[in-house]
Amino acid sequence: MTYAASLPGQPRGGTIAGPATERAVCVLAPNPSPMTLDGTNTWIVAEPDADLAVVIDPGPLDEDHLSAVIATAERAGKRIGLTLLTHGHPDHADGASRFAELTRSPVRALDPALRLGDEGLEAGDVITTGGLELRVVPTPGHTADSLSFHLPADGAVLTGDTVLGRGTTMVAHPDGRLGEYLESLRRLRSLTVDDGVDTVLPGHGPVLNDARGAVEFYLAHRANRLAQVETAVEAGYRTPGEVVAQVYADVDRSLWPAAELSVRAQLDYLQEHGLI
Image (cartoon, rainbow, N blue to C red; front, side, top):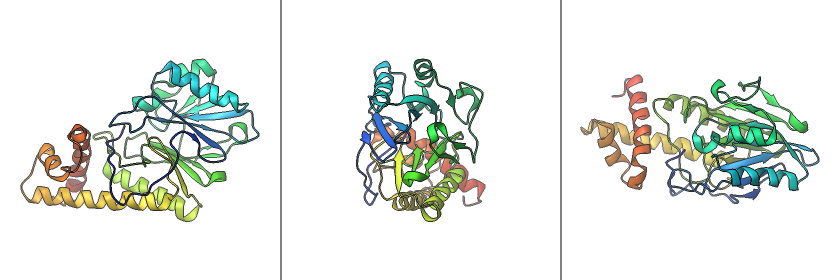
């Protein structure tokens, strides 16, 4: 889940649903909301000439959506061989168990509670289903179990809720931690600098065609928000609710409860570093 808001200066992308790269196709879940933007992006990833595909984040428990994902793969001549989860939030993972039944495929995730099968996911793992190469990249911070998936052949990274196609994401305190999130953003930036990643395939919102610009925007936005929170505390605003009202005045009030989770994470970060 997100607390996304359209912000000036953020890199803009292209498609939300349909083909995004040579190997990745998006099927948009019908769960739009202020927290999920246009809905959850379910990704089908496969080598062009392979008969097996990998699905990343089957999305909510919606029979029509899960059937649409399977049908999209089948129209391309592919069978689902594996399901991966970027993290356990319901809008990404609630449909995983049913999807596993429908496709007779295992589900791999970092969190053991979300796995269906013998194998989990760990940093450095490489998925090779159907000749595909997907590298597991740990990106905790939004949640403790957040992962991204590097698709080298397309110069792309699938980021779940760590980087969105529009707006920004929340650090879901207390599970999510700001220090870890900042380190995850730096790890993604390294992929754009050192590994040729130029495309972000996000869990919500459109594809971003300037991966480095998107990550740099996120880092700058986080630094700016953190400075604003520190200033608000110095001005006498002490509770998370008070800080939200000051710092997130430009964000729709319906998103303030989610923003408060990020504020709590920011306050923890500032306290841990002796800044307040």
